[in-house]
Image (cartoon, rainbow, N blue to C red):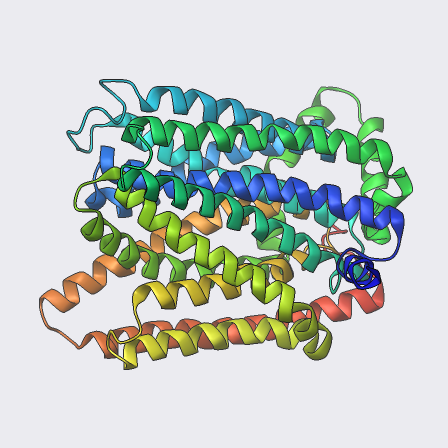
Length: 477
């Protein structure tokens, strides 16, 4: 079985220590994305069942303001704890929180058994905001930890292996959830709607409980010098920690406290490179939210009031998204990066996304919203996501952990709010017949794709130049 070993070494590398690191990080990703996949689809389904579909744009808007104070608290945690301890803590918090919410799903008054929807159903809002925090406070933290322990030359190999395991977690959990809910709809499994959602949320929480264990094994079996990542950034962070230890007295301590809490925002607006990463994320989220809103509307129509049918519909689509992304990584992403380089590969993402949007609009419904959404999301999961994360490698800890959380938290939610605002604006314009749907979408999405492509080109160029010079972005903050 020599070909199996060759494939194994091709995906995970030939260095035994590097393989251990990639596998442990990869299984952490498997657990996190598996849990996130389950929780994310539950979030929309439960919110629509408890609060109402018409309030989704409001929820995306208010999530921005709910997350801001939490980001400040998280920034302080990053200053106090070591990198792997931050990840272990956040995974534990979300595992416990998931179990608590799973219990209250079955509450007769605030939970799913109460079928009266309305804006005042606070439990639906609370669960929505809880899951919205998954991305900045869990998935983002894993990526930040990975970026701090991986070297730049691993982007074309290890990052794609990590992405494959990450997507495999989504494929497996989405398939299991889809199959479970489909069997329930067919009355092959005698479980109530509420109990089925509780089972899925408990499973999501149990997956997260594996992450602290995997982190503990990682720091034990991998030598400390192999967890440095980009050496220039590591040496800079080590020097910063030494300077922090020397600080004494009330004023220096307060100054360091305030600096630590606000440094993520400062780095984001101070450095064009970091702001460029924000823009890459922002453009994608605007497009994603605009199409996801239409998808959810179709799902609610198909479900005809059944929370189980709605869940089965959403999990079925996300299964094909994750599967397509996994196949993209396995069959072509690595070759694409090696052939085109970081810069040109980054540019292909908005161009392909724009092509899919144009095809959807031009064919006027022949290409379904489901197929369009699956292709766009799979490209983001399989290519754009890991490349966007690798841009953090030549940056400081404040950028990897704090600015990244602002980008994935506040920035992503701002993008979602913008996408929701565009959906509301579109409904108003079309209702009053000011302009055709094709013309409106062509101008809006065409402008986004054009700017997105330019930013992707500049970001790829800056990344390659920074690595070749051995520089650290954010080292003078």
